[in-house]
Amino acid sequence: MRVDNVTGPIAWHAEGPVWAAAWGGLRWVDGAAGDLLTLRDDGVTRQHVDDEYLAFVRPRRSGGFVAVGARTLYLADEADGETRAVARLGDDPGVRMNDGCCDPDGRLLAGSMAYDAGAGRGSLRRIDADLSISDVLPEVTISNGIAFTSEGSHAYYADTATGRVDVFDVSDGDLVNRRPFVSIPSDAGAPDGLCVAADGSVWVALWGGSAVHGYDSSGGLIESIRLPVPQVSACTFGGHGLNTLFITTSAQGLDPDHGTEAGSLFAVDLGIRGQPTLPFAG
Image 1 (cartoon, rainbow, N blue to C red):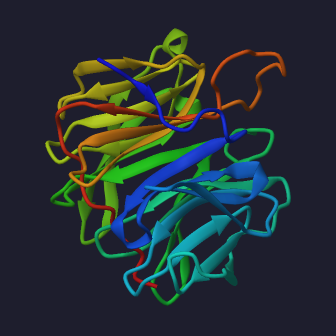
Image 2 (image 1 turned 30 degrees about the vertical axis):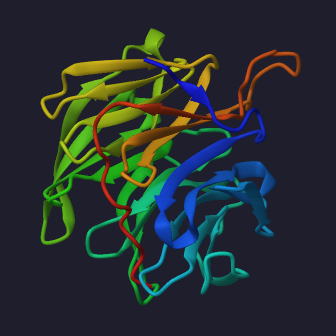
């Protein structure tokens, strides 16, 4: 299996890749830099958001995008439009937003964590189209990847500190009946960002594990994609046929002379298709 380095190490802490035809390709964040990076046919462009941290971004149904900063929600009306702050997502300066997605109803699910990764200081919150905010999961440590199956009946979720990916049933839009889906041995890394393919397989980036693992719907390991960097942060399917797995990596926590390609965007063709990105209704 050939894994290609698409960009070289252009980010310090690359995270949250997402594909949307509306903005012309793949978009991800360079977290502490506060930058949105977009990969198009003519290369990578950057757009800065004036925040101490940028967690993730999703397209909007109406056009433009929603971006989640450290504790602020931003909206833009065009694919490369200026952002405006529209809601506060928290007030504790020791806690920042981290990862999230949209559900099939167009609501934004946004998780958080403490800067010092203190136990139980994060949460998973839901932002509705009218920008009302409610708690979904309190007392999370490092709220990370979350994604839904194609029919919307299940959702997969990683609180990195647990060393697990859990699965929920989705009932009337709510996440219920949480249970373990797969446990990651500590020597294999820690579960970070994740995505779900059209065939129901689950793909999990392993922070500190130099890999992305693929699991079938029963939790059986079906693939291990090795990366030449230790901090693998997230993955998503994209490309014009949604058949390329894009993988973000990070240099966060590495020695300045680490000598790796950390911070690069990688890509691999697995022969399976992903799902279209679910947009925000707000």
